[in-house]
Image (cartoon, rainbow, N blue to C red):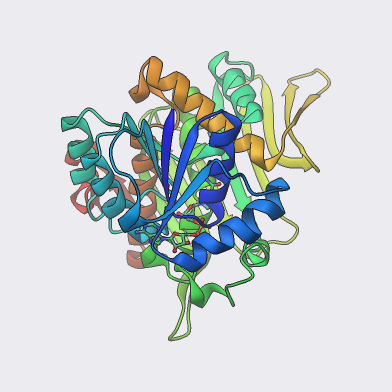
Amino acid sequence: MRVKIYGSGSIGNHLANASRQMGWSVDLCDVDSAALDRTRNNIYPARYGAWDDEISLHLNDEAPTGGHDLIAVGTPPDHHISVAMTAIAEKPKAILVEKPFCTPDLKGAQELTEAARENGVALFTGYDHVVGEAAQAMAGLLQNRAVGDIQSLDVEFREYWGGIFAAHPWLDGPKDTYLGYWQRGGGALGEHSHALNLWQHFAQQAGAGRVTQVQAMIDYVDDGTVSYDRLCQLNLRTETGLTGRVVQDVVTNPTRKWARVQGTGGYAEWQCGYAPGQDAVTLGPQDKDAELTTYDKTRPTDFILELRHIETALKTDPDASSISGAMGLDTMLVVAAAHKSAQSGKMVSIDYTKGYTQSALYA
Ligand SMILES: NC(=O)c1ccc[n+]([C@@H]2O[C@H](COP(=O)([O-])OP(=O)(O)OC[C@H]3O[C@@H](n4cnc5c(N)ncnc54)[C@H](O)[C@@H]3O)[C@@H](O)[C@H]2O)c1
């Protein structure tokens, strides 16, 4: 495979490394020559031991176009749609758009979906937790009804974002990046939307369908410079009537990334980072001892699994992938509904027949 990656920041380096581990060729592009220098001299060698001369670095304007199998969009979220639109013209087999897929106003989301379909380009989204080993085990329990009929589903990604800034020492804080601005895709709801996406994935694996109603309480920080949400609490209902809760924040320390399903026959729990280098799934059947299974993982392997999944999906049915573009955009519809709910104080419903647009949301 030939891969082109837009954005040579944190995720661009992860995807470049994972692509090289897959034996793929990589063109890594950025609009900023300082970001390309940082990749070669700092980020990549610090993370993976040494720079890899097989990776070609380019300014966007000087990058090769055409002939790539996969184009990944790892720019800040407010550039995802425009960069992905340009990428469609390059006619790759697939485009991987990082999370959150777009900004909460959903601008351009439906147009991109249609353009991809018309040009035969498969869309994927960067919610890599879903294709991790532990989440796949949890999904298997739900598909097999190992805990009976699902009565509740909770997912939390609660993580103080100091770690993100420690990994980006060239940034002073949220004001220097999209992270400090919810309308640009930052804040807790955008940054930790892995939790919401996992909730939607687990609900679908349990046969509960898509989210149709959203009620949100959001704690916004607005000091005249930054404008982001530090904590959001979402109550969700699906088309079959399953209700549950998602909590995402950028304040909790130590981190908690956790999901729990209660069913008529017991419970199942997923924990990301159960121990250093391990995720875990616990199955607690009614009247039996709980059984904990751990899954070894490293950050680089998260992205290798993701790319392996995409390679396989391209040979089978990309639309059926648990990280299809549609799954990423379903998450954005709920993100948009949540902001609308928090700001109006009303429950917001989603009408999927209206596409990925604001008109799909009504109070
Ligand atoms: N899936 C994951 O677990 C994961 C992890 C980290 C980041 N992300 C996502 O990846 C995206 C980027 O995050 P990051 O932490 O890598 O940001 P970052 O700030 O480290 O890097 C972004 C890079 O994109 C470049 N850029 C901006 N506009 C561009 C354009 N039009 N073309 C090419 N390059 C452009 C910037 O110069 C910068 O170097 C975000 O949406 C973030 O949420 C996902």
